[in-house]
Image: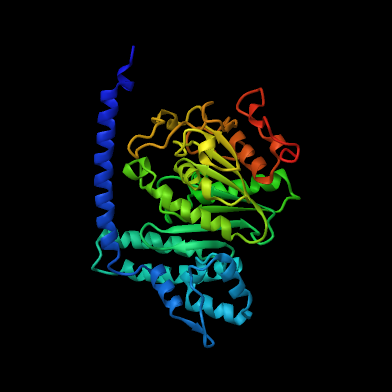
Length: 402
């Protein structure tokens, strides 16, 4: 007997509704795109200035050149010349894959200070509403906090809700790099939180970096809090589709390919961030050895094989995580596919004991954080599987588990 949930009529109605919603979404985003192109964003303005700029009579390379070519260009410059470029085009240099990471940190510090001054002026702009002036004050204080010299800001874009990425550890010398990819409602204002510290990208990355160092002082590690994509706002249409994930996947792939040295990379993807990682999986370079997801609504695939990646795929979910009630399906562009912790999906299922809900996976002392750290340093033999049979370690070679 066929159940109502799987009836052909219901499936047709679901598909029609999904198509209608997608049509409205596309129409709306198209209108937004038209409006947003009326004037250049600060980053676009900086990139345009770079494109037409010169250095000692020498034309600057295309900002969209490969990271390798841009790295060669910066390597050919003297230290004073690199500094001049950072001062002239701070946002362009600060977001340029291929530029030396220390130069990007310096350029973004300059850009953050400039944008902080801009927001301070907006705080007193009578043309803005009271709410607008209040928001300007919040942004000013956030930019000031990010501009502190000890912080290593790898990317920064003040446009809209803002994008930002921060590095913990020495990225140039790291043998292993972990990239924390957060989910919905991530923006420059909540990039860091005092309350619920470990639910924000900075707290997640700091906690993971500390756990990796505690697990192996000998391993040179770095962790990136990567909020350098435009995440969906809340649990609306954007979070139910792969539009934001597709845009984020392009940026994530560019980041990984531009990392200095020969470090291996583990992606640690939370909530909608796992959708980003799932979409990115097939195009990621071989240096990405592991993709670990937590509290995932799906990875836009029905099985690990459909991700088309050679990286090990790990998944975990706390028993109290509300995301388990999300419909794990994809119809007409809505939904993100199979449940990554289901046996049919085929991921290596990790323990998330003590994680306490959807936002607790990076809390110190949890098995979820322990597992992320062991994967980050490559100590696979020390991860704790969700089941006692150690099934998540099945098939790991001696070299992989060493």
